[in-house]
Length: 443
Image (cartoon, rainbow, N blue to C red; front, side, top):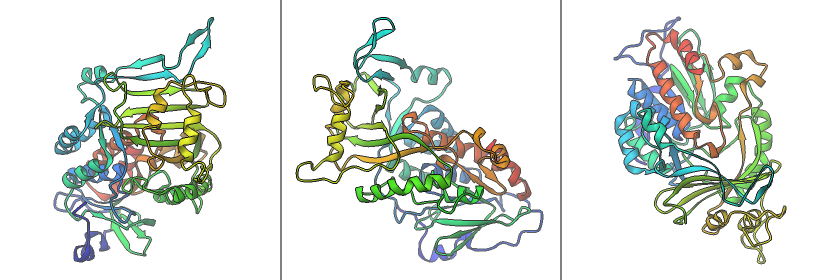
């Protein structure tokens, strides 16, 4: 991506200067706008930066990755997120719709993965529909645009090109800590290399293992552990993934994150699905696992195989006898009709293997899935009343509310966060009111 903050311009960046703000804050105007630092260059951070810029704020975006890697599968941008983007920046909306593949024009729903039930309660064969849902009709009735899927690198390119001025994004920039300067004076963020950055507002869009969240809630030392950002798209190799799987168990304990109970194998298969004309999204349900697939556009299928097992597991190393251990496992886990079935003798709908067999071993990435425990489980009053903001600092996206990938709402909820955050900050007339604005956003 072009337009990164580099060289001489980096040395003169506005956020390097510590502005002397009077005790009690300063007035905000068109000529002297709010200044906002966003950390995390994935979808949440990019949309937040675009939304704040659209409201006239001065924005800087810090991304820890060394480059914006052309990696990552399609993201579903559902109607709620498209409406938010349309209000933030109509050009971005038009570009995303033009680049996307509509998935709302076909059937979506849940199927039974294998033969299940009895004559009394009802007997289902593998692949029978349990429920079908319409995403197009309700969207049209509400005046919302239809869901599309767009490749992650394309989304990044569109947002960087149309969302804010060149020089907004600074790579190789991880925020380690910050200081609330108090009384409307803003925040001072400290980067990993010791660089200081000053702004009125700091937004942590730095993912599920957010360093900003660690500081905001006073979590354990390991809570802000490494996780590939949305900018890097999770572009890590198998060796790094195995180490991360083990490390994440420790990180999650410090970060107060909840293991979902599932490990997830995911891939984008270059394959025109046999049901592509009729089905855009489906889940094959089983007792101990399930298989999610969606149209990825361009004769590709994005799929997730979720298997219930303890956290921290890793796959066997490839050998001469078994050069593809991930594929070998998945072929057994989702063994199809007539094969003898999986370890519980369940014979799965063959659609799962159709997509698994269309992927290579290198295509398949594995990670354990974590989300956030319900807020009612916390005993911390501040977190209960304002879980995503404190003082001039706020969280959004996965840093605030991580969720399972099969919901198709991770990026969408992050987009709504960005819209609402910018709306609340856009009402601020004096920097002393930032805390109230972010509290309203958090609630």
